[in-house]
Image 1 (cartoon, rainbow, N blue to C red):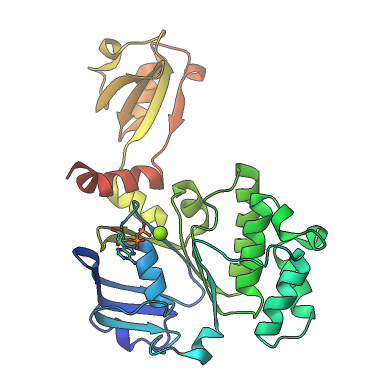
Image 2: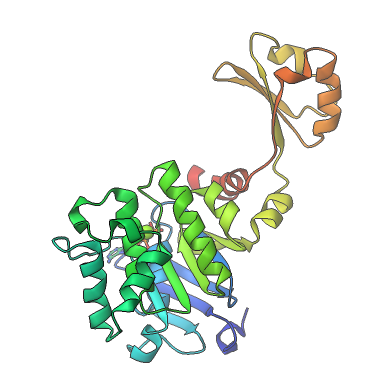
Length: 307
Ligand SMILES: Nc1ncnc2c1ncn2[C@@H]1O[C@H](COP(=O)(O)OP(=O)(O)O)[C@@H](O)[C@H]1O
Ligand SMILES: [Mg+2]
């Protein structure tokens, strides 16, 4: 990692970045690299330092020490040409609320000295064409979130930062934003984003960094993280069919407990356990859930939560 600051080909390279607010060490030596064209997720509990990390990379804050390179340049002192190449959606987006969606975007376009069609392009990109004439303060939460994204994208940036873009969305709105993000990634843009939705990170991200207390606990593809942590598969059977005592001794069963009316069995050899369970119950009564990024995340951050 020591050479991460000399990687002009990377989209983002941080080396030993530290930031302290008073007594809080928000970032405690963070090194990581985001490749161009990557969809990169930053995951971690509240207060982990995600926003601080993203805002330092965006040039909105300066670190106490360490180096940061963004598209081969330093984001500070304030680097206006670099800013033009970045699309930034912060955790609290500001709008011209009394304008319509289109007027809002035209105003932003004017600030960037862009031609008017930029507003239409941005509206289409986030699939907000039908709401173009609606006032911003009358848009739904999901529509506002998409407008915030359009605002961050209007100047056609190469590198996009999104801080919890799907935090307040209902499941359908979240899915529709996923499609927008996938399109952006398909266009060859680099996306760096934070989220608490681990299913979403698993579905969208090429790689994720898991941070806690200002340090990076792991960086890898969701698939590798799940595999390397060897989280167990969980088999569920209605608790009225089988009890803990019925399965505890079966080969391959690592643990068994009743949760919410179901017997939950953890195993790393699901086939073996399924065969044994097949002798006791109808296989259709068993639900199988293989390990997910959420399991890996919970395991990695378990020590943090206990301490
Ligand atoms: N401007 C600030 N002044 C003082 N403390 C801050 C400031 N911003 C963040 N912090 C603290 O730094 C830590 C990391 O915060 P943050 O980067 O917002 O984490 P996250 O986005 O992962 O929730 C937290 O303990 C938070 O309270
Ligand atoms: Mg945050």
